[in-house]
Image 1 (cartoon, protein in one colour):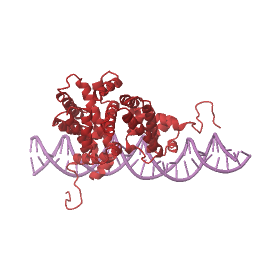
Image 2 (cartoon, rainbow over the protein chains, first blue to last red; image 1 turned 180 degrees about the vertical axis):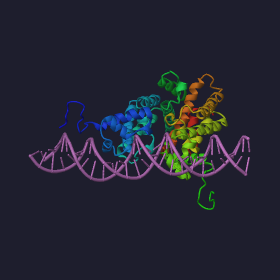
Image 3 (cartoon, each protein chain N blue to C red; image 1 turned 60 degrees about the vertical axis):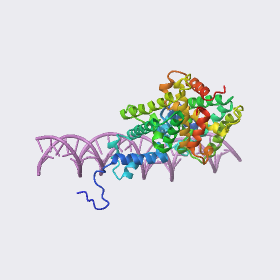
Image 4 (cartoon, chains in turn green, cyan, blue, red; image 1 turned 90 degrees about the vertical axis):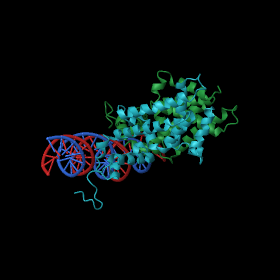
Length: 192
Length: 192
DNA sequence: AGGCAATCTAGCCATTGGCAAGTTCCGGCT
DNA sequence: AGCCGGAACTTGCCAATGGCTAGATTGCCT
């Protein structure tokens, strides 16, 4: 008898997986992945401490699921990009809009490397990365696209990383980070 | 009586602080900062589990000390740089030679932000960063040095980060990462 | 209606970080 | 020399965590 009147929660949560994910993203965004506590997530969702394990095997499983989701979101964002600079802007925007995903996606030591969902999602996003570089620089046919890709990715990734870790606060000031990135991009890739 | 003949360790370690630091750098370099266990470090050094706390208040204190040391090392490395591209190369080289330091230095959530040693060491390295940019680009007088600094730092930091997190393995292959970075730099900063 | 599998709970264990109180030792001062 | 203050280290403790196992509950499918 669920005693549904007031306060009493039903035995089955209904959407625990998503609830845990939401809480995890929230916690990671504010305190980083290291501070993530499965038991705390369970408490927030109002379930027992062992409940999360049923949806994500372990801590690593949870982080892996987040990383996979992140790669999917990133791939979608990059797919709409028009030109290399725009792809970079979208990369940075993704990092700002999904800081928790971003902080987890590129940390192999936190992830279950063999995971299928992760592998396929990662393949998607890398493919978009590659696409953005190869299709968008017809005028620079002489340069190695592989090298250009490394350069563009390093630049965007570095900016996003430094931004999220608040290491650019002093330099960017109150300007819009996205705009700063855009102008910096024009400095490095004077194609536009 | 220390019973110095065989096996028996003296009550005082002699150089515990350094021993703990060495062990910590080792552990972080292989498993990342999240996997760091104070008790494990104590075991490795052959002391009790509470001994480390005497030299570094807590986990945060240890990581803060490492970060401060790292900023000092980075500042020293950058001080010898000749030109912006060379500074970038040295930045990447520093990350490869001191991966543990590098992985900790730019993670505020792991550090005691008020710490004096950290603050001063960080001031040193940022100053060298700024120097490398402002002094090395006389021909591009028109461009905002602040923006050029962001661009250069983002690029170098991104490359170093992606390299350490093994996200460039597939792209760099068996080439020398430093050489790859150098040629990528020439692509972005066609001054050389 | 019956049963099965997914979902969730309860309890246990090893490990960890951090704190407090006690012990050993070094070094300086008289 | 003797002593004494403080630094270096230890032992013991507590709360919290991740992960495992066994058991309870429930929705769903036939």
